[in-house]
Each structure stands twice: as C-alpha cells, then as structure tokens.
Image (cartoon, rainbow, N blue to C red; front, side):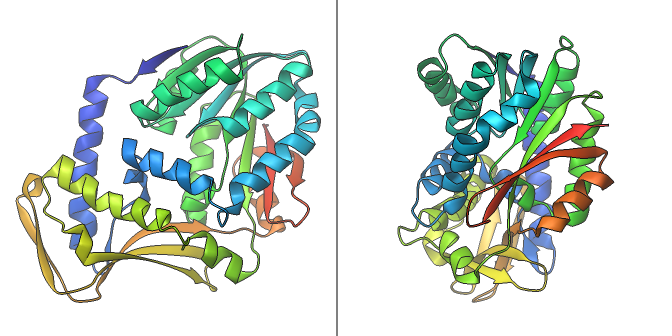
Length: 326
C-alpha cells in the first residue's frame, strides 16, 4: 500500500482553520464547535470503538446490507476497471466486504481510502494487507474534497465513491446538498456514489446509540476539548464538562452538546483569548440528521445524480443508496 499525504502547507492551513473555527464558534451565542474536528488520531480510535458498541446499530446494519445485497450492488460494475474511493474510511471493514463482492463480479479494483488521520491510514494499511490481499491500495491523507481534487488529476478510471455510515447526517439539509454537489463536480458522467443514510426510527433507539452505557461516545465528544488543549494551548479541565446527546423531533436530528458543569474561564493560548462559561452552558458539537425514504430521492435529484438502487436492512433502520452521475 502507498499513500499520498497532502502537502505540509495544507496541514498548516488546516491547523489555521481549526484555530479560526474554535475562535468563531466559542465567540458565538450559543457557543459551538464543529464536528469536523472530532477526528484526530485519538478521535478516530474512539470512533472505531463506537462502531463496535451494541447500541450503535448503523455499523451492523450497513454490514448486513453489504453481505446480503453486495452482489446486487457489485453487478452494476461487473467486468469494469474501478477505483473504489472511500471517504472517511475508518477501519475499512465494511468496504472490504463490498470489494470482495466487486471482485467476485469480475471488477478490477483499486482501493483509494481518504481519511484526515495519518494514524487511521496506517492502521488501515495493515487491515487491507490482511483482508484484501492482491488489491492495489493507494490512500490519501487529507480532507474529502481536497482528496477528490487530487484524485481528479490522476488516471481516468471509473470511480465508485463511498460515503458510508451516517456521515451525510453530520450536515444539515442545505449543507448536505452543497457537499454532494462538490463531490459531483469532481466526478465524471457514469461515475457512481454510494451513500449511507440513517433512517428515522424509534427515538429510544436513537438516544441509546448516542448515549452508550460504556461512555465511549462521551469520551469521543470530550476529546474535542483535549484536542484544543493539545494543538491550540487550551486549558480546558475536561472533568468539569459532560456530554449530552438528545433528539430534536422538529429537525429530525440527534444533537450533541458539551455542557459546562460550573462557571469557569478557559484560556486558549493560540487565540490569545479567554472564554467565559456559565454553569450548565452548552457548546453544540454535532448534528446527526435522520432521513425519510422520500428525502433520499429528492437529495439525489437536487445534486446531479440518478438513483440506481436502494438497499435497506430488514427493520428499515438504515439505507445505502447507489447514485450515478448524470
């Protein structure tokens, strides 16, 4: 496996963006931090643990879809030479199942994972050697759209882009449309996108998934404060904060917050600024929007894609939608 790390200038630019986002978000009312910054190496490790939790159903549901409907998905690519581009690859386990199905359909596959975490890419390297031996793997360390831009300058294979899990839910509906249009702009007619959608369901199921008994989701959210301390010279005392996850029935989103458990002042050296927090004041950290079936068709139509297939688990908790660039 080889991988391409985006240039140090880009890394420096990302660090500057992180600082600007923190400054902007903590200066607003109500305060907020972007979920974009969850995935440093520690955050990526914690998210792998979240995906293995009993309460966190999307991983198992999507794995079931690939095991059961993978051959049906792969039939769209039978005999093709194909780049499988995995946005936010994680440990790659679900993707490896799909790649197996594609190879069984006679597709010649190159695997191109894109992930912001260099540590996650190194772990994925080892997993790919074991799980999909013989498949060429070329990783890209960087943000999704930057990685797709880089890939667009490479050879002209057909592409199947994967945006799995419930990652699309981290965007509200206007930003989801904008993000998908940016993906569309980096693809060619005939390329495909496979998107995972977490569907609306019993609210108790949702609440349990984002408030697990082991506290891994709590640690994942609190790690954002630890990252600010490490990279920006913050002095957050993480023990004085708690994670709170709730469901907004009006927007259809799970919402995550970091809540100050007492009045406190936090200084962030890189910003040369202090921030005041009242007791029980929240920082919003994440949205995870849930979808109805008809939302998926509308989103495809508005972003330049046509639907080639929809694949759901038996409970209809999760759906993977295969779209084609038109």
